[in-house]
Every structure is written in C-alpha cells, then in structure tokens.
Amino acid sequence: MGSIDMDRLDRVVGLLILAQEHGLVLARNGDKLKMSQAVKHEDPKLGIVFRTLAANKESVLAIMEDSAAVRQWLDLTQQHLINLHNELYDMRERWISAEKMYLSLHPDNQGCLCAPGQCRDEAVVRCDYCAYGLSDSTGNNGS
Image 1 (cartoon, rainbow, N blue to C red):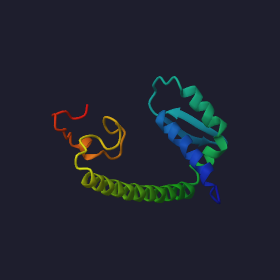
Image 2 (image 1 turned 90 degrees about the vertical axis):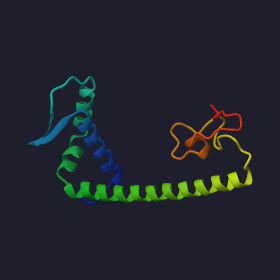
Image 3 (image 1 turned 45 degrees about the vertical axis):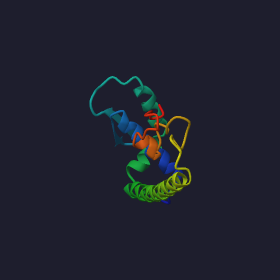
Image 4 (image 1 turned 30 degrees about the vertical axis):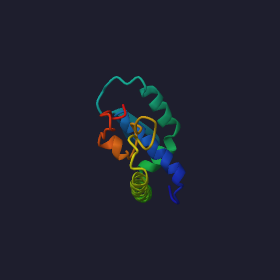
C-alpha cells in the first residue's frame, strides 16, 4: 500500500473483518482472491460477502500482503483508542464531580438526576440514585 491512505486502509480492514465474521479464509491464488469457509456451514449472506470481497479484490490482496500497513493501522488505531479512553475518563470524572456538587446544593433531590424516571440503560455512568437503588422517603426507588 506504500504511503498509507488511512480511510482506504480502514475500509479494507473492515472487509477483512467481514470475511472473518463469516468464517472465511482468504488466500492469493495467482492474481485471484481465493475465498473458502474454514468450517462449512450455511450462511445466507455468504453470496453477498463473496461478491463484496471480489469487488474489492485488489485492495484486499494488497492489504493481505502489506503487513507494515496493517501494523501501522493497528498502531494508529491504538493511539486513537487511548485518546478516546482518556477523554472518556476525564469526562466521567467531571460528571462525578458535577453530580456531587449538585447533590450538595440540592440534598432534597430524591430521584434520578439525568432523566425522568431513571438513567438510560446504555448509560456509561449512572447517577448514585440509579446505580445504588437509592429510595426516596416513601420507599420507592423511582420505578
């Protein structure tokens, strides 16, 4: 791949992941891309996956043979994940501090701080009320 185009490389890595998710083994056979199932099984989407990989044959073959490009992608992606982790950690700490400050200013608050009812199911952080099942003065937990 020479000088790396990260967007293109990212798309091709996505194709390799697609092949792996469908149990395919990829190999070069001359100028062709050989695709076979590691373990034979029914896969209703296999035809679409084969056509998608075949349509991107040159890129897939190129990345299969360019270990330096894959290593560079992994390194850059790792750095990106580190940055995201640090950002998430910093934001979580700010969230915790804001919740503590809010509760010290409004000690009579007896429910979820984030939403009417309770924190979202997919929340990365939950308020103390939702996280610890705290009850209001009537014994209800807001549900």
